[in-house]
Image 1 (spheres, one colour):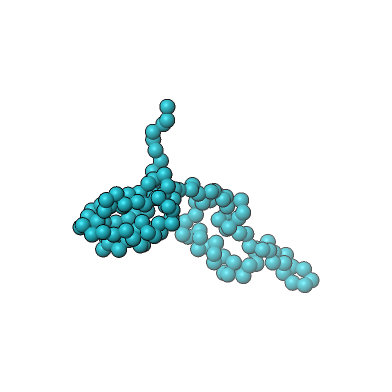
Image 2: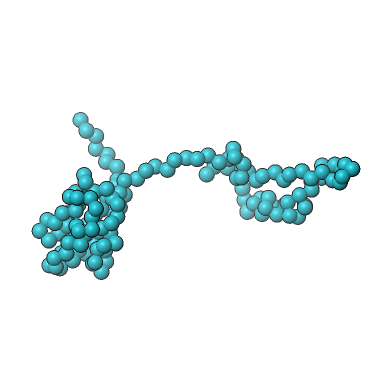
Amino acid sequence: MSRDLPLGRRDFLLARLRPVLAGAVTAAATHTDSGPVIDAPLAPPWARSSARRRVPLPTMAFLATVDRFTCLAGAGQLCSVCVERCPEPGALTLDGLYPMVDSERCTGCGACEPACPAPSPAIRVLPRLPSKRTSP
């Protein structure tokens, strides 16, 4: 979020307390027959509509990864919970005892991560890193 001016703690507190301390009456207020004219206090720089710009966040793709050392299959136990809980058919498959992730089919939904029964989760859903390779 960008601001027009740098804003310190003192400026912030003065801008927040000024209408309370001054009673929202400025020095340039004029008196009429019905009483003093009260000017509306100026909005602080971060509250003005010109200071707010909506910037879209980059979308990130996620991918499940399997840590073979913490997986229960590493201890010789048959476990297929992550494969059963995966909503995308063919994204997680068993290669012998170990689960394997097909990066083309994995959507990164994260359904397999909380389903892992290992003491320290063997499946993590991490952001996909962009490839630096270019196709010829």
